[in-house]
Image 1 (spheres, helix red, strand yellow):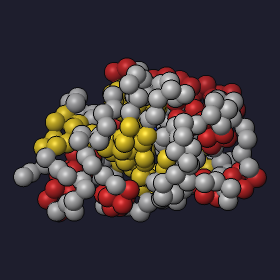
Image 2 (cartoon, protein in one colour):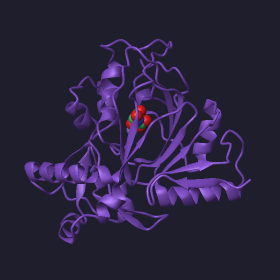
Image 3 (tube, rainbow, N blue to C red):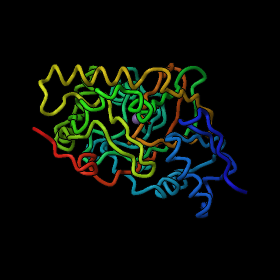
Length: 298
Ligand code: OGA
Ligand code: MN
């Protein structure tokens, strides 16, 4: 049977059915998924039954799996294979985390608009988040279409931001939530990195903003002017008309393009309910400045 694609909006987010991601996909099925990914940027695959290896195997069709930076901390324990990012509210032993736990304080940052791993020199191309248990209330994920947001900018703004480079830093987004307890090894592994403000997604040819809560300054602009521009672009890009809200069901796998979307989690009662999600993250091919042929000003 052929894969079925049901758009959620005309140009952003679609549901994909008639496909079992737990079984090997033939070239035709994968090509249909890759086409839909290029067009919609967010794909929802309901009713999947994936173990860790099956989720990783599907993710690897899009490229190599990104290393888990939490593994630089040798004290860190993992509940699942460190090749997957554990997006649950559970300890490595499987209990609901304590109110003052370090992971809980770190993961609040996922409630800020961001794109995955833009704070790494080579950021994430795609993420595949799979729901094993969902919260009965809240715990949704919102996605913003940064291509549509770019297209809707006034031509003068598009011209003003062309070629600009932002500095992305995990410490910047974590400072916004009050988290500052990085270890020396984590800091050393994650220095600030340059990323273009506007990029082109090769598969669709579409221009897109490239933004995240990790971005704190714009290279070559005074600190305050850079921040003001980033705030203005973030507010524009997350207007409701560009946003799709995903309400999770157990067995949903959601695949998104980190090159041209942002996302954020919404709150839920994480001291009462288990929300168990695992993320496979596919690395991009190079730093975004390199991909765009932009040289970062200092
Ligand atoms: C992520 C993320 C938000 C959420 O998995 O990268 O930001 O709703 N998740 O869990
Ligand atoms: Mn994320």
